[in-house]
Length: 402
Ligand SMILES: *Cc1c(COP(=O)(O)O)cnc(C)c1O
Image 1 (cartoon, rainbow, N blue to C red):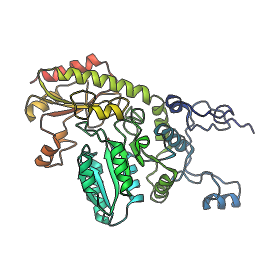
Image 2 (cartoon, rainbow, N blue to C red):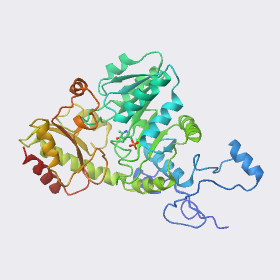
Image 3 (cartoon, rainbow, N blue to C red):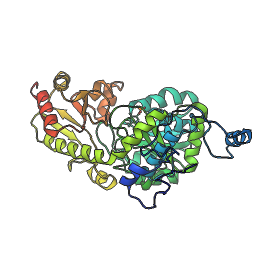
Image 4 (tube, rainbow, N blue to C red):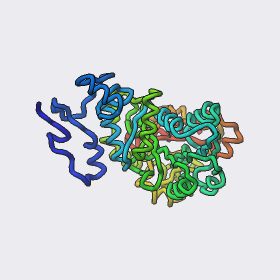
């Protein structure tokens, strides 16, 4: 039997840079000697004999048993993402929400308390408020950029601090290091949803976070094809979440893992391009007479700019702005665009545009929206990889209706 492994029998050297790991990490070639990552579609695996089966079932011997537990293509994705996040380990899940649900199920018990940043992804709020509360988990929401509010919200039964930075849609920035210190002082885990930056721009574990969660659906794929998620962290923490997946089943499809593997290879290049186009468009918007405020942490004028500049490699592709007009005018503006896709999704090669007050943040009361700074005239865009001129012309198509 030939043994064609990681690199034609040669294992990867230590000390490779992130861009090389994005292309190479985690690949274990089969005896077929395939160059690209193989897509291994098999729900279960055969054993050499009964003794082998017993040992693998008992966990005394490594090796695949069933794809709900492990799959070589999914493992390849997990190892590559772990390498990029600087994590010991990673577990892949069926979606970003499956990642958040699995981590909460694995780490929380009845009577525990979780503190969550106020402007997290809407389904995260629904998951906690509609479901975890049924099992006696208490939730408090605090502004992501106010460390004192986090400090005051901590109670004796607090177990998790959960945040997204930069926030959606206003790009508010959390100081991960400060909150990581607070979490460890109070024996809590700090969990960062790193969806907006991806590991190409921000590595929360290096700043002291305990776990990173991802919706791979966004920038990791980057091309709007598949749903997936992941949690990265220490072997011990990830093992506890993997146990939940074995029993509960929200595992990643091998096909989706294979798509995400190819997405990771171009992640850093795409994130640079998204960030640079978003910066150009943010600066341009700030000079338009029909624009009120621009919310992009890349701009000097943004209150989170200094912190984001320290904590992130670039500022990402998502920004929002107000237009000088009311709700009707804002809808007209959005409806007049023809290149931007009108969708709440983000992190795609295709630019997207959405009206947060009546979609992503529509469930909030007018008072809650006002407190969160999300007015009727706010527009959020995710800047894709189209030519900047075409995107600016498209926004001007909207402006012509004002
Ligand atoms: C989309 C998203 C999620 C949920 O991910 P799914 O893959 O859609 O389940 C979680 N967090 C953030 C920040 C997101 O943008």
